[in-house]
Image (cartoon, rainbow, N blue to C red):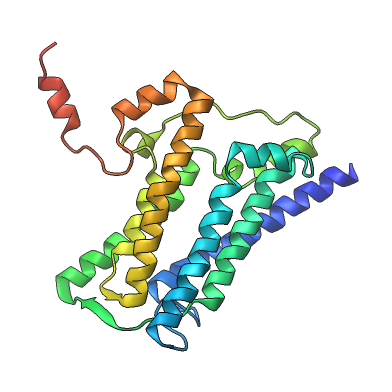
Length: 251
């Protein structure tokens, strides 16, 4: 009973750290409120800043992708109880993200700057992106995604079951709405600096590569069901006119 309680506390602490890092990310990317953000902090020469920032983003990408792979999960099962695996992933992802926030080197050279209606539109898209990313986690199973459900199940002494394949709400429009939300949040900037552009480009490249591995794992897990889903639903960009074309096509 004590070990199950410790697992639950571990999951809750990991989730709390995720919440802190996610909220800080809002301020970091948008230059709101927080003391150190993507464009606020001690400046240094371009070459050093690019090397440091790419190293930080690469560390996050490697940790985030490697720990998500089934082979790593099977290996880590030798050391971690199943109820702890997702929480450990969330904990290390949050710590790596916090390290990025702490050590990020701003490159404040302005690439573009907007005002008026355009600035308002970009700001709205920026916040829409964060909303899509966060809301999409709740459309599947938010607490399973961040390891809390597994810990509660283990605390009750029940067996942890796998998740069934579902495509609710935004998942009927794109296969990865969370990633779509992040891309909107990263790119919709009324003021785009060189540092912000580096952040957006590197994260876009990471997302496009990481999704290939994730899709491969989903096909391995769900087989023909996911392959059919891939044929019907685009990865990131909605097919705005798909329904009209389908309805008008000959049978």
